[in-house]
Length: 124
Image 1 (cartoon, rainbow, N blue to C red):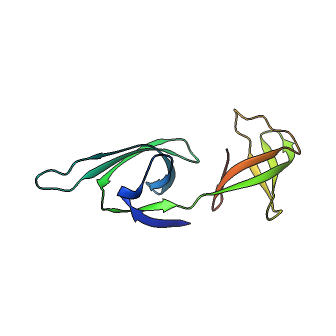
Image 2: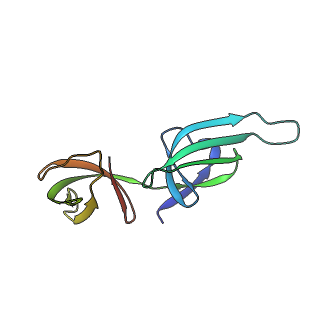
Image 3: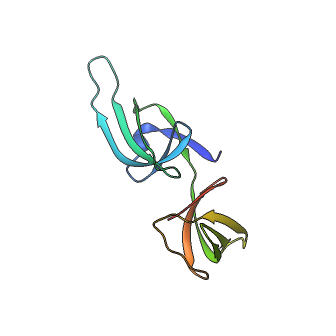
């Protein structure tokens, strides 16, 4: 899996984090001050990038955590067939099949932007 390790204190809203081995986008990040006998804690509220489920995480700010490497790519819709579409990557000219989300209306020859992590893809 394409990921790298970083400290929890370096996270910020809008960035990505791995929670339960799932890439998530951070919606809220807050820290609590250290107490008399402990270290500062961070609370992260996030939503799965590819599945849309809400997840939360509570860790010390100096703990190590995995951050996924998600690429933002451009593609052109080649054909639309029911709930699937063929998309050609504009850099590698590779053709991939993607599922069309319910809230998006696409047509052939339209340029789209999508997120890719390993074999998972999502239209932005």
